[in-house]
Image 1 (cartoon, helix red, strand yellow):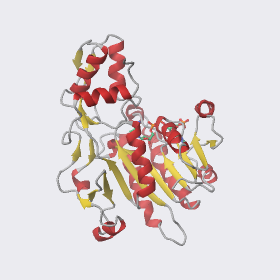
Image 2 (spheres, protein in one colour; image 1 turned 120 degrees about the horizontal axis):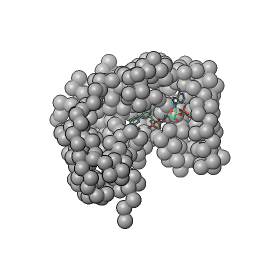
Image 3 (cartoon, protein in one colour; image 1 turned 180 degrees about the vertical axis):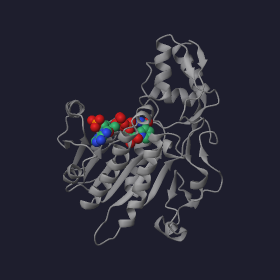
Image 4 (spheres, helix red, strand yellow; image 1 turned 45 degrees about the vertical axis):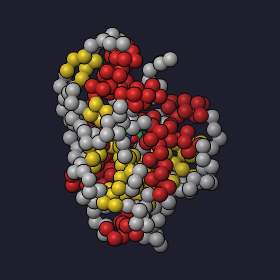
Length: 335
Ligand SMILES: NC(=O)c1ccc[n+]([C@@H]2O[C@H](COP(=O)([O-])OP(=O)(O)OC[C@H]3O[C@@H](n4cnc5c(N)ncnc54)[C@H](OP(=O)(O)O)[C@@H]3O)[C@@H](O)[C@H]2O)c1
């Protein structure tokens, strides 16, 4: 799939963008274009990666002309650029809309204009029945991507638009595990919002596996969701105390816009969701079931064993698995 291909990653200097770049450099891709705004981040990445197949393009996804030019001769697009900090977007909603919604529409337009083969956007659990503006903007991004397949007309347009959806990657900035680690290292009590809280566990490698797999085997107009185990916040606390030593804990209450459990497929979406064995797929509800089955060669079945796909109704990581996940994330020094 990637042999000889030209790939563009919007938000290529971000944490996902850099990991994805590393993964794609291990294929026989011809060129990988990194598209983002900040020149310092690009310079750092250029020096660190030091690979002649990389091209660094300064630009803003709010600027369609720039995207159009950047996507000339591009075969595959991964759309990872976003504003993603919930409180920042709550306070500056216009900016969230300009980047996450209008920017995503520009990415779609440029893909269509430049006849890109496949375009995969990176979604988030926060888009599911959203409680905050960030989630709402990412929901619109998904909707734009899924609906963009309406243009799929073999003579003029050929881009297959797809989305993936998952929650916080273990160890990503602002997420709970690094926050607790920081608190323990500073000898502070760790701040637990609600002892009942659960979250899905996804590592960067698992996220990359999904994204690559979807670019290769996704059909069109679909949102893909990984099958994951979950963890409880109290297990994270116990595991970190075991690794780093015990400080203390304080219950601070759930924050506005935060959910007790992470939902990756809600009750309404379940009706158009399919089990593909290693992952789930939310089909465009306007598509006919027989067509969907045909596209997937019958190797799928409707989800019929759960009402919602939520972190409180899946298997939990054992404490040993959680400890391994935290240690392998490199967030703690452990000998
Ligand atoms: N981190 C997670 O745990 C997680 C979980 C689920 C989904 N996601 C989604 O995954 C994607 C990547 O997340 P991440 O953690 O890698 O984010 P990140 O580290 O904050 O990276 C964001 C990237 O987007 C670029 N960017 C921001 N605004 C832009 C604009 N207007 N035009 C062009 N580039 C722009 C940034 O570079 P410049 O600032 O230099 O432009 C940076 O390269 C996001 O769409 C996010 O919603 C993340």
